[in-house]
Length: 301
View 1: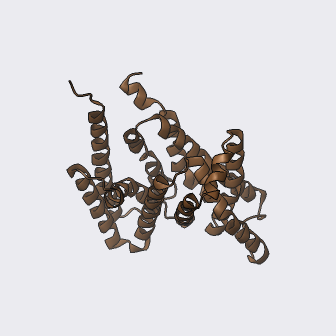
View 2: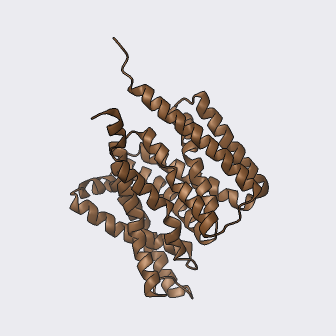
View 3: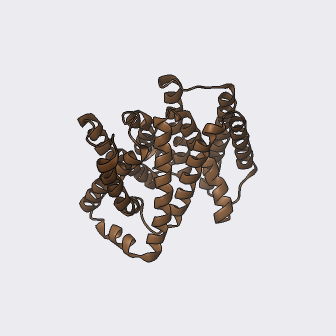
């Protein structure tokens, strides 16, 4: 298999994952008016059921049980569970409160933040190009913050929680799917408790409001699991540098939805911020591809 063929292997799964993540606002907009906490709770409940079925079919339940039993792994999972729960809650809140642009900005920032986290926690080194990209992104964030402090926290919180989540999952000795099963299992008691509380005490709970709403709440499990399965498959087949470039499909689709479908305000500060972020992303992506190609060159003996 040639180098180009190797880079393209897994491309359909990668594109599929990020396209699904990109169009996720369309899904969660159908649940507008329902508490984001209840949406997350149902997302957890139905994801647990679906993931355990998938693990059983793949005969990987042993990995799931072993991760829950092992104290060290479970401690990692408790941290990652807290981070991903916060990320889901902020993301859904942003969508149902017409802050899709702020959400898309967070996921543009995330890969640049990952580089900084690698330097801080894994002794990785940044080259000059990466430093320039991060400085440009920081300038973009500062420009937007100067005008819109009410939404910049969404972007920074999403980037921060997902970046830290990825870092913890990198250190945790468990695979992607068994790890997600552990995380959702640890959240399950809280999720079930909240759904029960909402059904008894909330005057307008989401569950039972209509068949349409119930179907979307149940489908939240598949919306959580399917993109992750595609992503995990792609990550095993293709270089991370290529995958890193493709990941910008998601926030680009979200950006387009926010501006052109839901008509969210797009101010001059937004324009400057996103322009700087896009330049930073382009620099970052070109540098990643360049370094990936250089790493594949076999030196002459």
